[in-house]
Each structure stands twice: as structure tokens, then as C-alpha cells.
Length: 239
Image (tube, rainbow, N blue to C red; front, side, top):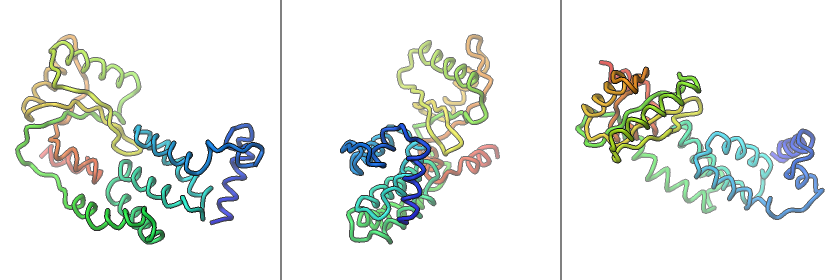
């Protein structure tokens, strides 16, 4: 692990010699702002701001750089939380189990044990259902769209929300996994209402949205984000 850490440090120093961080690693400058604690806090803030993919890349680098140090378990736990968002429950469980096994006496190890005993079992039991709901969303898969079509779709939905003065509807771009983002209209009271708005967006002059949205209840949206089983939901919806 130490050899790998040295390799990563040397790569950073040789490939990015003029960067502030490379100079810190080489000892050219001493900067407490790049202490392990400060680096961790910065990456945790990036994670909280939704920068999951970029943060995971940096966290993996820091796990190598700080291998054997007292802060390594914090980076490992942060990695687990990012994997929960980008890869789902299976990857989350595996990463948390690693923290629990390698660092059982640390605060992170104890938190990992709690997650494995209390949180993971509850999440694993969540399944797609057809129960009635008064909270629905409409989702659009952005992975099959061009940058121009995403901009056009977003503008037309925002125009519809403004035109109808419906302040209950909100629009967001949500990460699904590393390869897919979803454009989500939140705030429908029923599946029927969501479908009606979808039809209006497709048919009415001034909108003419080409994409067909997929209605989903708030429960099932939570499930597909946890289990990353959107395809299963799509198949079930088309039956």
C-alpha cells in the first residue's frame, strides 16, 4: 500500500509539477490548507454539492496517497457514500463492509457497523410497487439526448411551468448513475395528471416536446435510485 501511495505521489509530481498540490507533495512548499483533514473536508463538501463523479476520482487518489494514515477510513467512508449515489445499494454495502472490517474500532468503523445492521437491511427490502400515491414525477432519460435537445427540452418544460403558473411543479436534473442523468418534473398529484401534462407538452403548439416522459411515484423513484433498477421499472410500466 505504501509503494502504491508513493507511486501515486510521484505520478502527481511528475505529470502536474506546476500545480499547488504537486509542490506540497514534493516538499517545495508547506501548506496546511492541503493537510489530509482539509483535503477531506473539501471533498466532502464537493460530495454534498452533488459532484459525485469528480469527487470519487479524487477520493480514490487520496486513498492511495494517504494509505496507512489515521484519516484513511474517512476517505473510505466518503467513497462508500458516493458509491451509494452512483452505483446503488450493492456497491454501497460492499464499501461499508470494507470499512467495518478494516477499521472496526474507529468512529467510521462503528458507523459502518450501524449502517450494515440498521440501514442496509431496510434499503434492501424496498421494492417497486403499484400502490396508490399522491406524489408523482415525470422523468426523461438524458443519456439518449444531445446537448441541444436537453437544452430545448428543459426550456420548454420551464416555459410550461411558467405559462401555467403552477408553483407546485419543480424541475431538476438528477444523477442516476455514472452514465445517466434524469430530467425530473416533481409535484404531480396523480399518475393521470402526469400523463396529461406529458401529452400536452407533446401536442400543444409552443411546446411540441419530442421526448416522451415516464411517470413514476415518489416511492418507486426512491427504489430505482437505491437499486439502480430503472430498466426493470420501464419493462413493468410497458406491460
